Picture (tube, helix red, strand yellow):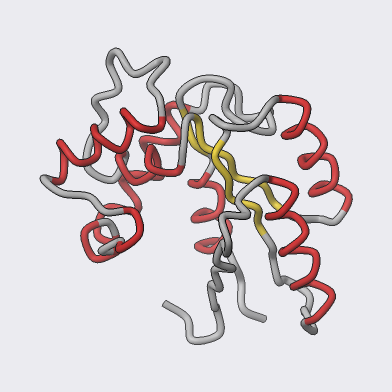
Length: 163
């Protein structure tokens, strides 16, 4: 809740959501803006549609450029799901499509292109705790099974110290 902490989301345009496009947008943003000490840049992406080789390449580039990386398996919608439920039984190999349906079932309605953040904001700390509990291999660059590292972005924001 600090006025000195800003979270900017670089929107995906023209369907360019591949990890390499996300990285390029973030790198361009870094070049074009005067970032100061303490500023953080994060790649937030879905794991489900991208081969391990592509994720590994982007993870290496992110590390080299000091970007954080928060992937979700199968998709970002799982992070949102954790705001409202910790029932992950039988979801080990859930598809993105089915994950979106599970979220609709929990919420009653869900439209990812018109997200009502007010339905999630009160439960962020709960989602962080649930995601952390599911992160059985925190040293991994992305979850290899059902999970999300988006909680790390939230932790970084909460831990940010304004000097």
